[in-house]
Length: 265
Image 1: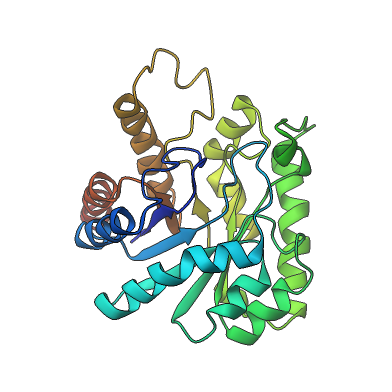
Image 2: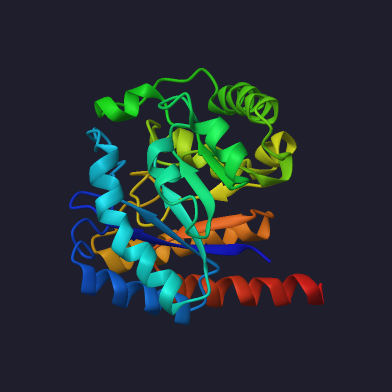
């Protein structure tokens, strides 16, 4: 069954929930809610990666993450993922039950990241994020699927060369990261192409308006949630390994229903 990664953004300017869980008590409450709702993994980030984002120092990320990670380990039995491009951040929590590293730069931002992931034996989520995204732009592709194929084959080889177990590598095509609406839709229509590159896939389209055509007429966040849920359902039906989501409860219910339908058929 597709696994659910519940998102906790400890930032003021994330895609969907910037500032909502920035204070410690709100963050703790939201973590407990996501676990109760059925999250398999909690993904915590202290650096926004929305279009045009700015770098956040490793020290700032560490100071922001520390009390949250401590709270989780003291109060819950759940797998933890850290959303960071910094190996320094990962190393700071090397003894804190960190089983996943979610790196939107795929190791390009920090040349020590792959070595660190290998040493800690973490699962490694790597995202296709072109440099244009941090500049607030979309890249123009001749064929986005061809680019993903070249990009991930090179990155997977680099990971394996650094000693990362292939089964612990997870590829994320980067819906909404430096891509036009048509390119985002093309990726979602061709999950099978991603699966031919690597079996472990993460889709993180949660609460992003990644296509003006697809989301035409959607006016509220609740409308957006329903539209995103449809993309998650399709992704699960096509065998995606992980979904990175904000709304754990309704996504978990949907995935459980899909899993039962798969088993019946």
